[in-house]
Image (cartoon, rainbow, N blue to C red; front, side, top):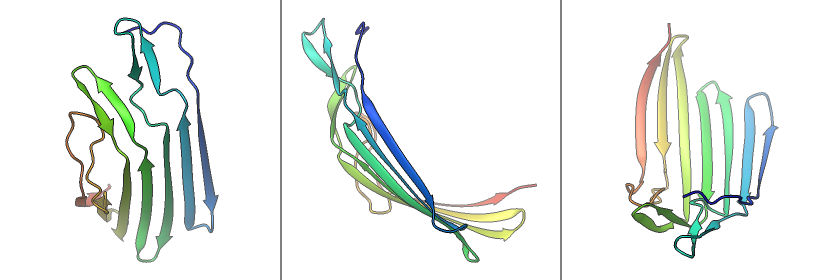
Length: 142
């Protein structure tokens, strides 16, 4: 569907602060002011498939025990429509944890805990329900 000339607006604000050389905090706030468009064919408003508000924050650190990242992400509830799929997405809150231990200069152990708080949700209508995922791996560089 070509909506022709449209007006879109939004704001994205991010801030990164180096507490020390080894500890970094980071945050982002997004506002999307355009949440729907008028559809001339159906005479209804179609959603833009994005939340009006979302934000995230993280802390990253390096130590003798390894590197870590803790992320928090919030996505507000929003209307979704794509072909035969339509419905409500969210709201959801996600906490992710990433850990890397440097075994040698060429070998690392990584542990990722995604959606650690197990907030069961869909990120698109018709998609899978997302829950907690734990991934462990070794990475070799040469």
